[in-house]
Length: 398
Image (cartoon, rainbow, N blue to C red; front, side, top):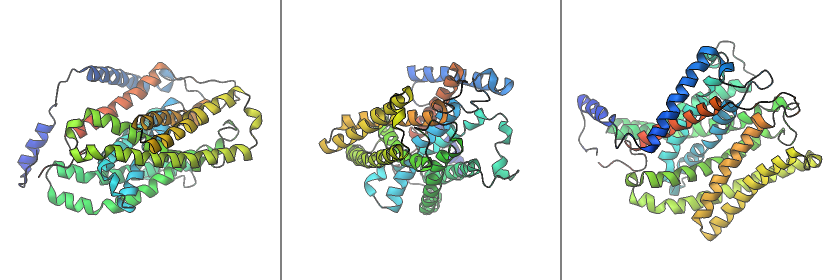
């Protein structure tokens, strides 16, 4: 527990050394599983960099982007959308109801970008060129990738700045906290602008793939659809992550925060339902305008309906009913189904329905899946480490 006194530099370093020590038992079932997955993933990663992509992936000339792009980057960034939504609501729109979830949401968003967007390095044939858009080596000003890469970097810095007062509070650095807190509003406005642009920018990447992407998923409005879906994807992740956190980190949560969580979840479910209605309306207009009726009776049409009806329309109805009846169980089920729906949508656009009419096929290897799981476990462990030490779910006592 932090005291009110000012710490000297040696005292602060002593505190940090103490905090670096493990808290709780090390060899729990979850820790053992995480260690197994991470160690195995690191070995696979070493083989990938030593022998190339072909040694551990099924990527080919027809499918240069696979699971690591489709899941880690395209899907992971959508799941991180809750950070810009919550900070916009609290700091710009002054919706103070959501203030208790700002810190965990920003932390989750920041870690998602660090690990999921950072996993982009794994998929690059020449990973040492990843800095080219930043250092000015042949800028591609007209490239969507140029925009997305810069936005990823700047948004990570903005989220780090938004979270930095928590670190200062943890270290009992009151002056630093006051100074950093003054920068929060500017960082939020800057971050929201960047996030809306690169969420849609990820959809814009596929505007150039019209001959390759199945007509049921291709649209000139892909950027708008990606941005709209990131809204309810982010909300669903907040509900999912918050539900788990309130069980795992119950002793770290302020009683007032814990008591208000259900009300926050119901408000989020209303926002998710509204954004999903808007998204479904746009999907319907695009479907009718594109005259895609002839695809409905095909296997691709059936798969499209699974994504849109089962994992978008039904969760939307569950969010609506759960909000009206104040049914927390329905809202949680809807959040889980929504996350599956977003995963399907992003993988359909980036992998499954991509090159749909080509004789070449792509199925991720078990090693690709393993490395993706490694990234997920690493983020969970870092999130847990931070929450168990810093005042993320509660303010420090002074």
